[in-house]
Image (cartoon, rainbow over all chains, first blue to last red; front, side, top):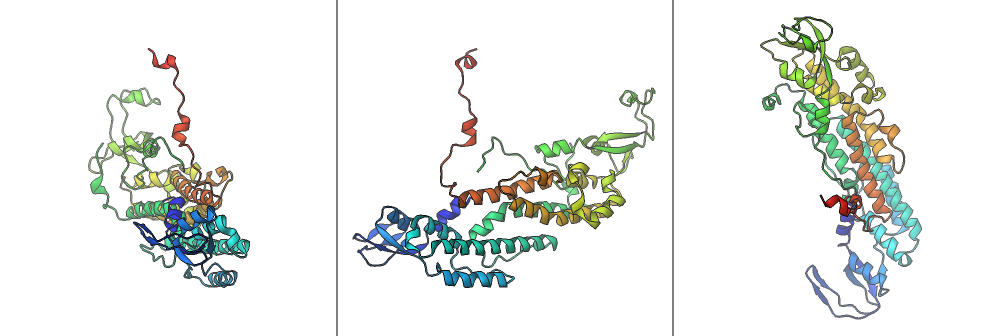
Amino acid sequence: MDPSEVEFLAEKEIVKIIPNFSLDKIYLIGGDLGPFNPGLQVDVPVWLALNLKQRQKCRIVPPEWMDVDKLEEMRDLERREDAFTPVPSPYYMELTKLLLNYASDNIPKADEIRTLVKDIWDTRIAKLRLSADSFISQMEAHAKLDNLTLMEINTIRSFLLDSLNCMYKLRSNLQPGSSKGQLTDY
Amino acid sequence: MDTQSYLPVQPGVGMEENFLSLDDILLSHERLPARTECTFPRLGFLEKTTDSQDITEGTKMELPLWLSKGLYERKRRVLSVELPKVYREGWRTIFKADPNVVDLHKMGPYYYGLGSQMLHFDSPENPEIAQTLLQTFIGRFRRIMDSSQNAYNEDTSVLVEHLDCLEKTLFRSGQSGLNSFQSWEKGQASQLTASSLVLNYRKRKMTDIQP
């Protein structure tokens, strides 16, 4: 999977916007949106919010978790715990990048938030690598990926899958006769 | 994203080989020390050291893996294959002590592949060989993972220098994960680019087409 595909999925998340135009309810396959009234908050998916924002037709209300105090608390917790802590949103990294890139004027202390989210990400990736290593060295067969987001899994997926494939084959060497039956005669 | 003009077939790694894998084809040309257990009549011209017509019993020679695999049989002893020295007791101790210090590219470069293939020849040391291969892989895993996930935008030739061919493919898949994430983060992923395949097309000249 490509990161841009993960980003595409993240664009389905709902954010609040304050529009500055009025429009009746619009009926889309994915659900009904609106009605839009100037100054009244309304829930829309991220893709629409960004589109309206780029045309300067709305103000984006940042999600609750996108706040310096909350993120600092989360970062400290993430550093303290050995296991992965629950994340505020399954697409926290993607949303931060999208909203900060296109609507940084609507989000207070955008730069600090960017740094904090990057810190949380780095801590989690380091943990992910650590657990992947212990997964391999203890030759486990399955693992539970609690609280991991799609983007995090995606960065390590191809590497981990290839390594597990190799390890499986090297392990099946240990049982003599298991693959000898398939030996083809050239 | 890198698009390739063909998808390489992955090596089989284990005891079986992938017929279409380039790595496995190269692997099958690795030379193994072997000793003939019977006379090969009229094949003396292959062995340059003697003038006799036949290859006599007990001649020591190096045979490629594909040939020794074909000639080796458990019941009729045609030839016996010795272990290359990386898989022998002495080297196994080194691998047990610290797999990270060994230059597997120099020792291999198909350390895992050849090691698994050696299990075809019934040697009493087979279980130990298989165990060492697995432990070596596990021991070296962390370093490959860390180096492949952290080396962004730098020369990786020093990092892959000591890696076996199998580990190099792993390194590359780790790098592709890192690179695609970084290019997304920098916003390059949203720019549309021409496929490298299309870029490589040259405009055909009239003279090439006409006979």
